[in-house]
Length: 200
Image (tube, rainbow, N blue to C red; front, side):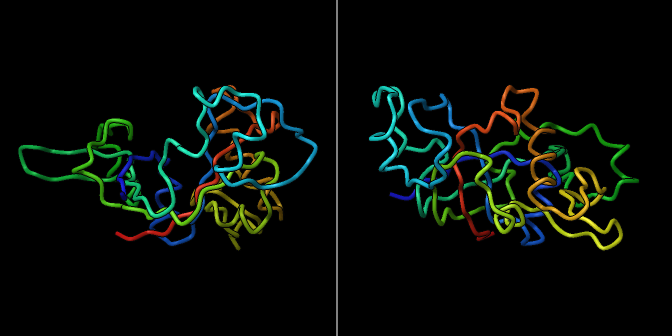
């Protein structure tokens, strides 16, 4: 049975999805599994994961990723503003900056399903340690080459810029979102890797 579940994206990553630059996302596995050798680089599909960890399978059923499974649908929650009296909805991603100052935006976590405009189909899910990401995968995460900056960036404003390496740009962007949450790039946490395609 195909299910629909929510997933939150930052404004730069929503822009990347709309521009068809982003087809992967990495999300922290909670709780973090233990008993795996972090020196060994390999990818695992969720069905195999419980056999390789000491985590109680009753508490951590990896094959049931909280974001769904292959062929399920994700609806994107993004920063928005609705005006119920007019029936209007505005989305921060793509909004001209000169208009943003007139809006008090609502955080993406509060977006209801009916307001979602982007739907994604899960093509695959697997598990890996964060630093196993390749340059090609970093680009699939939405990192792109900006000719004006002569380097890779994560958003249109040039933040997370770094000379010539998309992995380092992704690492900077990851830390901007996750370091304060206790999962910095250097800690090399285990993550769900979700590959998707935009259907709406």
